Length: 255
Ligand SMILES: NC(=O)c1ccc[n+]([C@@H]2O[C@H](COP(=O)([O-])OP(=O)(O)OC[C@H]3O[C@@H](n4cnc5c(N)ncnc54)[C@H](O)[C@@H]3O)[C@@H](O)[C@H]2O)c1
Image (cartoon, rainbow, N blue to C red; front, side, top):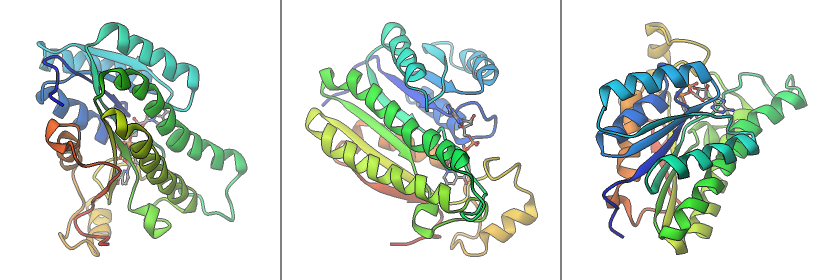
């Protein structure tokens, strides 16, 4: 189906200044989307909205004070999107948290927190977007897993994060089956190590080198490279890609 002239995207996880979410938002603005950008770091959402309004004065941009794990917060966010932006075509869902605690030490509370943000958050964002996309018979959703989902844990995150990121693959495939008949596709990106601060702070050159040793491309990824993949997955051109897991890891995990 052809895209409308005016189209909107929701992007979560834009609070972290060097995170993937901000790069995705900027990329989709360049691609011609009006955007709603959300995060639980409310001040950072507000300052980011100011920045991108200056950079993209021709686009409609709204900020969402959003906790993806909270049903009420997500409902309110979509009410704002429906009221203030054109037709919602795309949802990109990078909001997430890592967890470096091993299974033998993790509390039930921390386990639930990691699953609530990553999994419940992904489901609530998908469900809310679907309500707006279904009547138009058109939509693109992109979720975020990790190659950790296959490997059981990475350099920083352990089993709880691996489990939550594996569950996101199931949610994606379930959504792809349930929503596909109404023209809504759902795919999931599984990044390898990307140069952000999710692994407990800025990556030093030493740490990057250590993380790169088993990556065929010999380096960690840049958030712009993930944003470029999102750009394709939310475009008209990706119309027959559905329920897929796309690794973006420099070849670290091949299957
Ligand atoms: N960076 C990597 O190496 C890497 C690798 C594999 C997968 N991923 C995944 O990619 C996604 C983006 O990663 P990143 O590196 O940009 O992370 P990041 O930590 O830089 O950004 C994550 C953002 O999510 C937000 N967030 C956390 N809890 C939230 C909540 N309850 N509601 C709303 N927002 C919330 C944070 O405030 C932050 O702005 C994550 O889902 C992550 O698990 C990242």
